[in-house]
Length: 161
Image 1 (cartoon, helix red, strand yellow):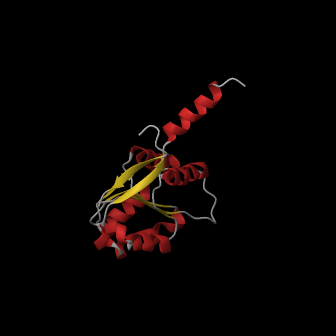
Image 2 (cartoon, one colour):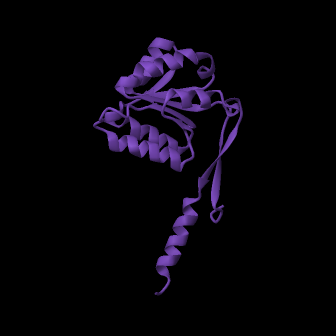
Image 3 (cartoon, helix red, strand yellow):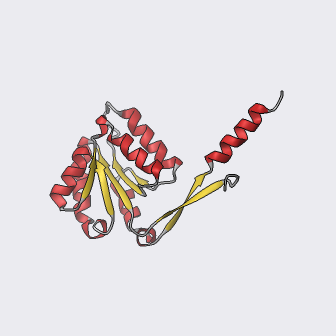
């Protein structure tokens, strides 16, 4: 396993879905969650700050809340991805509005890609992902084996020039 190029992680039938939205996109995400309530109720939902609270209050879906994005919520979601506790992200970010926590947003997007997590940044992609055949099935995520990568780097550094 240490020398394999990739490591596979199983996403179960019950997905752990993170729901995140910037201020200008919160109501869009709430409406999307309401429209897809029958699907979402079969999965574990979490989200950042106000977004989690609004979805929970307006749809009656249970949503575990983390801090708001500017107060570290994006980083909390990122750490949950690294720990293997988030399988799927819907993050409606506002590309036309400057955010004080843009570095955190970029870090979250990067970590989702590194760990091969499906991530929707608009409603069209969220709809496609939610209606995918994999929503009701298991899926093996393929993640680069960073241990092998590190061993290879160490070996190169320790060789005489």
